[in-house]
Image 1 (cartoon, helix red, strand yellow):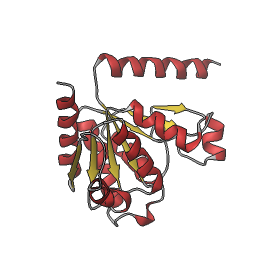
Image 2 (cartoon, one colour):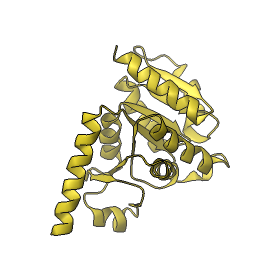
Image 3 (cartoon, helix red, strand yellow):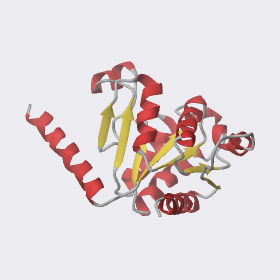
Image 4 (cartoon, helix red, strand yellow):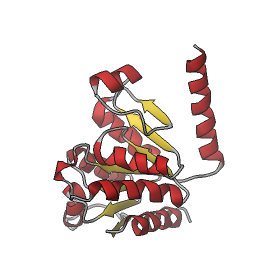
Length: 201
């Protein structure tokens, strides 16, 4: 019971810290299975996570494996805050049923809404979204952010969904969207932060 209460206290105070300091929350969406990604995906994903922290933001991911997990590890190595949104309803289900990691997160929100519901909650909790490689789930998170008119950053040259976004958005679509592109993680994070802040002016 003492460990549980300490965990709740940590969560509450961490979230208060984030909101009191007005830190931007950037979600990283990417392939949980990195076989379709470029060979340097580990380095790219770690750099994205580190840059999010170095540039003063909080990292959000789907508390999953692959590219998002690597980004979360990068964020932790840089001394930052990493929040995961799990498809599971509990820690046991997260680990045993979904077989997802817990090691790179300060807080895991157990949504209980499986992957589709988790994607919605995670994306809406963020101020902006970065696509890193990706498969169909990444495309789902992209369309949520796209329809919600959240600023989106695309790490081109990382493979998968991220390298198809330019072609997708050339098709007719509704409204004005903010999408920035770069092949350099540091530059991409800076561009996305600038876009988020500009949208608040």
